[in-house]
Length: 293
Image (cartoon, rainbow, N blue to C red; front, side, top):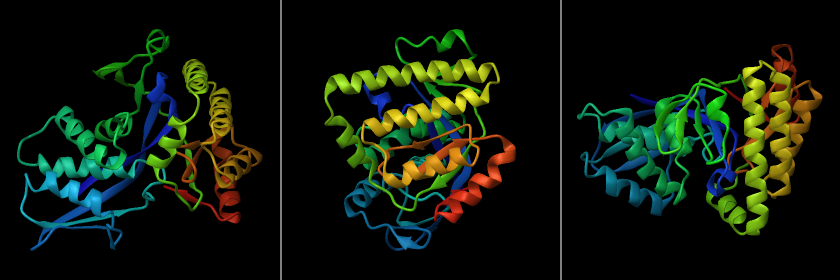
């Protein structure tokens, strides 16, 4: 069996492609996969046949260099396309499988994972597959970031660093998804000055979040998440369901909440006092939203 964990972007979705930093953390929720040799290639997700013919063909083109035909059976609680790294997780699993006989390093697995991720997202930032491969919080640092002076970081490659900033979060699913590629294209179509202003603001929030985290000020950290959601709303990346989930979490006592991932649907993450966790989960459920993990 092969396994890989999901991920959640705390801060920096979309803006990381336009010069800001980003912070991504691994989730406890994971994807499991069983492979059995069969007479033809097949991919199933929770017993449902993988139906993206174009992506399927591109995946098999890589896989056939490493194995004879077979069936990849994926099982997971992570909704595909919901912004929690499902594609990064299966990309990681495909990479583990392909390199299973070569004692690969994490760098090797991550490199091949990125190649698989390109099938799903064309020009991914590399953040998702890196967080999933290393199963660790990952920072992408912008050129103007002052974070290096605040915390200990371990360099991976380029402007990617491992960190120990890993707050407890509650993750909820709104019940619908919008393809990440569609949201990325929507964001790309926005005016350049608006994208640049957004990236600058997000970069500032990341620095403020890190400072508060190192001061053990989780309430302020949560407020920075909520501010990030407000900025994403201004960029038309949210949805009525995601906005409602954020408001429900805040009304139930969360320090802060925001959409995570591409947006337009998918998931919300929240930071909250431990005493408020059950109430947030309950209130989401009462309004038709389920908790992940």
